[in-house]
Image (cartoon, rainbow, N blue to C red; front, side):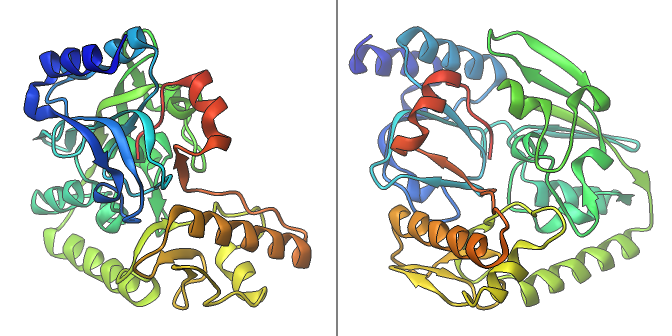
Length: 319
């Protein structure tokens, strides 16, 4: 299928305003880095999402599900595929009693604040997480002692054949930065969270406390993708990087944050190659000095070394 035929097909599904050509990905990632995606789609419903994915499959072109772009580094050359963004689109919220039903594109921070207004506790940990519900379930996002597995009751996902599945909490297999969703290439459509009744004032006070802690300890004034590395067993990535003497170390416009060494930040003009070069140096130094392997938590898109995985699995994760 040619680019023009695919473009017309995507426009028929999503409307002309819902399909962009050569859209700069730096506009859609919290790193503020990334070249153009061949096509950028904004489906407004689950059926449109399913049809968009089916069109990509038929065309034999890779595709990537994007939330708020808070945990992804896109190549400077861009992505020769279709980016499908759910943020700003699939973001309805329904609250009934202690149950909260969210579509995949809902920001976690928004969900936490809506829960607080209803006097529902359990989601305070998510009030400062910049990602969407979909991405949070893929990686079992967590912070300050809370995780998605603590609050999710069930989720509706789409498998690789386009079939909808309703998975209970135990079927989601939520672990440290992993899930069955990530392992099987599912796409999250919605989830039902089970919270508890609480006092609004106490909930909001806890959220304010966590917001203050984040502001004091994390480099929120810079563009980044959050924590760059997963927590190695028995260690903390940020401390290992600091002890390796890498606080403030730079490669081009990418820098190890001086406030929190677990963050690689964009000081303003960083390229994706700068970031990858810095990450490689950090990993090499930590390995050399401490014998510990640091695994990236940030996902990459559009790089040659990821081409085989993109071609093999096509269905990508939500971030």
